[in-house]
Amino acid sequence: MSRWEPSGLPIYRWDLAPDGLATYRQLRARQLRPGGHPVVAQLERPRRKRPPLIAYLYRIDLAKPVRPMTPAKWGALAKAMCARRTCPECRTDAGYCIPTSLGMCVTCAYPDEQCAA
Image (cartoon, rainbow, N blue to C red):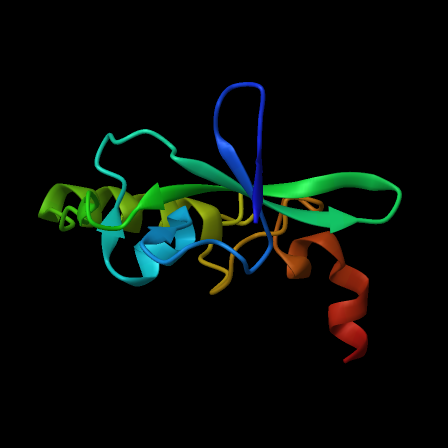
């Protein structure tokens, strides 16, 4: 059972979508991507006192395989992760992603607590 949105897309209740349709995350789990095809329907999950959660549905038969990572993309990802792990204060690799709330590694943020341990 579905209803129609003013834009012309059918709206299905959560877990009641017909076979052959999948959300973006479901496509990625199957190593697929929408491939430029438009959204064909919506899922709505009702919530109390808040607007419903909405997920867009794509046709599985029109989906294309995910593009493989190139060596350049792997290199760019490695550089980005290294930058997230490097403390701007002491310039060392913390071994974990630096919390944005602190802006530096835990050792630099709380130097007194490190001596007590």
